[in-house]
Length: 421
Ligand code: EPZ
Image (cartoon, rainbow, N blue to C red; front, side, top):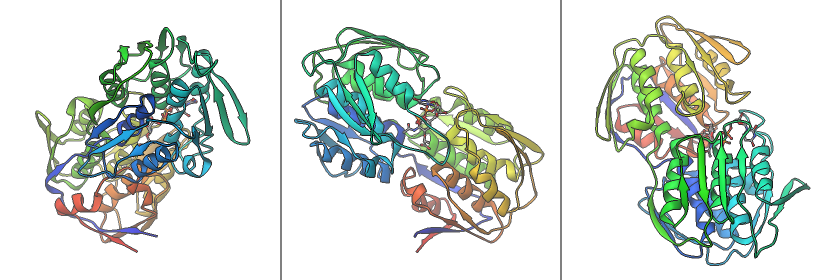
């Protein structure tokens, strides 16, 4: 199984281009299920999860062109089998995003429950609750959600849905379902993430009537059908934040092109607090590390708060910072697995409930560490780039799920990284 070998201690220097966003591309690919016409996508990242989603859609009868130069065309002229099987869903929870679109388009769906996850329980009760409010009958049998609209002809109907908590894919699933529902749907306490806004932009290009995306109340006026469209997927704010944190941790100086700095406020603010100098020029973000970073405490929250997907990278930054930081995780119950691995590199971290107290140390020492999930592995890479000697990050298939061409991009910034078998 592939590992990443990192010889640390080199300040990152140079330029890198930001890829398309995984967490926007996945729901947008599912939007293709809502129309019989082609959906032509641009800036789709070359990632394991994108390949898994394409495979899932093909199994349903969707024509999916190969991904080339970030371009892919999807066409769901006919949905031959509205099923998302366990063997795919277990590898990628985002597969649940087909549920709302399948129900809205064809009136029925059979989607495996995602099951447990390394970072938390992650139930889908809010997805189910919202679709039931829109008239879907959903039963759970043998690990599958069997869902059916009132009737294929009548389909779903509009509803007022108040989410019990902010859920990103929950909001996206209901948003897609509501586009073809009869009447008006209100999604309250909706997720405000930029990826939700990007999905809404694509749906509007397909003819959907949506207001309020990006706010906590989204209003959708259902239409009878949607058409094909062209859409360019937004830039990946978490990939951007990861490179910036790595540059700050190594005391480097990098320039990121094609970024979306307006989606990164909380992250940029914390990097400045850590002592980094940041210049923004349109879609270019330049960061210059200011020597040893200052310790900054973070508390994760739904957008526009500090992203939970940046938490591990900031724990690695805090591990070598001047002073102590408190990292509080409020979104997922079990998202500190990387802390134990960082301790293997010599980090001083004490976990207390959903907070980690990180006392910065002068130096980390390279060692073998185990990736447990996508962002945890990004945190270990940041630490490995700083540590003395060699760090071996195992199970990097987690990284391949969400970071396009990571070794090539890091090597381009002067890092000494290599994938080893
Ligand atoms: C999305 O996951 C992202 N994934 C995650 O990124 C990200 O960490 C998360 O949002 C939070 O920002 C994609 O967009 C594909 P949630 P999602 O539903 O939608 C609870 C990455 O690294 N909840 O917003 O699955 C849930 O357990 C991934 O790229 C319910 O209780 O997250 C969690 O505690 C990891 N019931 C909280 O809400 C529900 O029905 C927020 O989860 C739904 C969610």
